[in-house]
Length: 96
Image 1 (tube, one colour):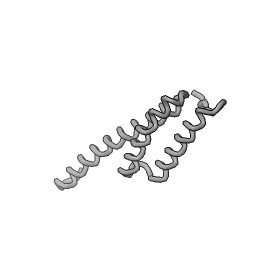
Image 2 (image 1 turned 45 degrees about the vertical axis):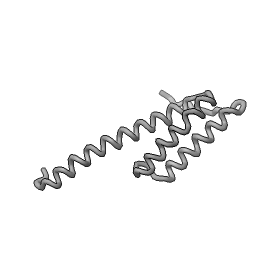
Image 3 (image 1 turned 60 degrees about the vertical axis):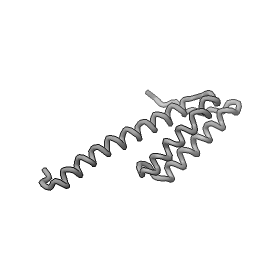
Image 4 (image 1 turned 90 degrees about the vertical axis):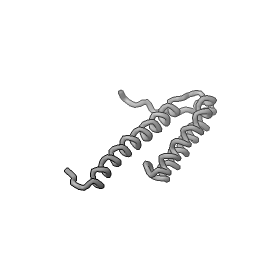
């Protein structure tokens, strides 16, 4: 157990920050998942700006690498563009 006051405060801050970061990361992951499961182009286009902003915020805070954020945004945009085309959405079905 830490003996210094500053170390104890550090532990409290770190734990608080960890939970905070975990919440934002999970919320963003759920939003991305929801967008990927959307098959209606109109709905997907409405959701995209919000999801992109969440991804950007994670990158800004250093919770995801900026390249990972860019890749995610690119893939989501690509997915939405494919939605409009006939036979467009190639959604991989995962085994439950």
